[in-house]
Image 1 (spheres, rainbow, N blue to C red):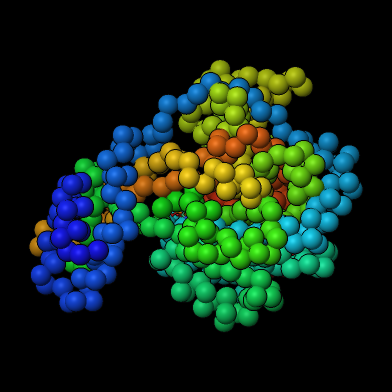
Image 2 (cartoon, protein in one colour; image 1 turned 180 degrees about the vertical axis):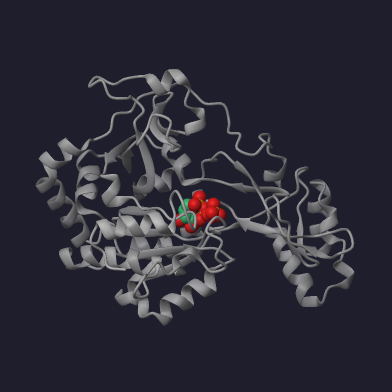
Length: 409
Ligand code: UTP
């Protein structure tokens, strides 16, 4: 993009301050800034829901029943067989979402590099690979394993895996790709500058993962390998079951476009998004959107009707992903501390939130699909998220759960 083109694009969306220091930049810095302007989608900054946490108007919410533990146990042998056959045939791939900033954990490194060991190093990435290896051993087949990173952590993540010899995984079955970044702005929608030649950006949420697979070319690799289903999961659940044959078998047998692992809510007001139907289509309703009436509604068994929270472990059918890929997902606006240059060009690292980042989320992809199987798992066996250093969903609580599951740290 030329300077003139960048000027026109920025002028049209009221962001001309991006070029304030252009004259001072080296040729290389100018080139990088122009490329950043070309790639950026500034339209998100004028999003209608400019208040953090606000989401678009919801449709009519009704219950969506889950496949519960008793039914799964009854059908386990058959499901596992179907799942293992699919894995053996190379039809199942894994996608690790590791592009987040992990700000709550407060480590400078990618979250997956966090060492949760006590007497030996146990990195989060290592735990996830060890879990996948269990299925590799059981099925005798390597599962194509895709890792999403972002501009902020790509090189360090790839180096870390290389240095650790992919924790025993076959390197030709591991594929790294980067997600897109989105500009971060002040409360009035003006983008911040991180350096004189660089717009402040942050990863654009975990909702763009499939588009990023396509853009980067790893989706072609995936198709070449014959993958028909992708198991997408978060980096921070250290009890994550990956390519779980029973789950895979259940989703395939029910001919669902997507399966979502869910856990029974610990309390009616627990702060998790729960599965539901919205205007007759599968969806997830956030805890703050659950009215008193919905919270008290009961199903046929007399249990709460909105009782199953998602844990960010989904199995998507690739052909359905291809069909919805260009659908617009809602934009989530999140308040954040954004480093910026003040009016004198001095870099400030704020101690309090000073603006917004803009994200699309994987959970919103569910609503685009025609069918979803919520699949119950036992929380203590499969859900040990690490969001914080201490307290709820922390390194401490995850260590406790790993011990309970007999994993030496
Ligand atoms: P979180 O919502 O916990 O976000 O991500 P985060 O950035 O890791 O952590 P905080 O909120 O800053 O503390 C859930 C999952 O989605 C991935 C994360 O890496 C994690 O696996 N994610 C999140 C991405 O891959 N990209 C993103 O842009 C955001």
